Image (tube, rainbow, N blue to C red; front, top):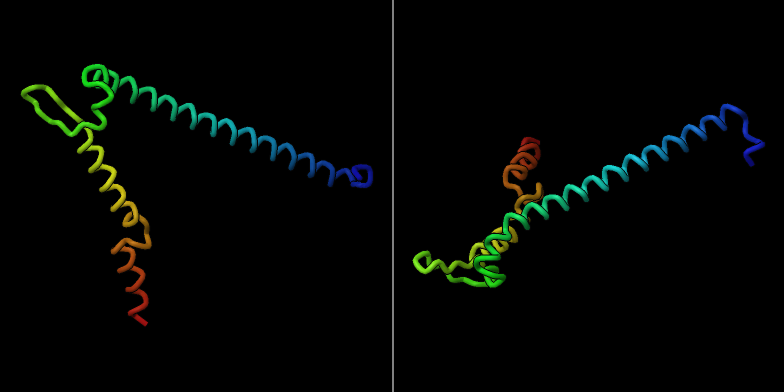
Length: 112
C-alpha cells in the first residue's frame, strides 16, 4: 500500500507518525515526572511524620487522647474532622452547587 502513495502523501504520513511518537514520548516523560514528584512528596511527609510515630507509636492515628500535661496525644479527632468536613464541602466546590454560579446563571434567565 505504501508503494501506491505519492511522495508528498508519504512525507505527510511520516511527519504525522514522528509527531505522534514525539507527543507520546513527551506525555510519558511528564507522566513519569508526576509519579516521581508524588513519590517525593510521600517520602517527605513520611520523613516529617517519623518523629511523631517514634514517640507516640502507630496508635497515634486512632487515639483520641489529648493530654498535654502527661504528653499523651492522639490524632484521630483532627483526622476525623478533616475527612468529614472534606466529604461535606467537596460537592459544594463544583460549579453546579456553587451559589455564586447559580446567581450568575439565573441572572441571565431572569432578564428575558
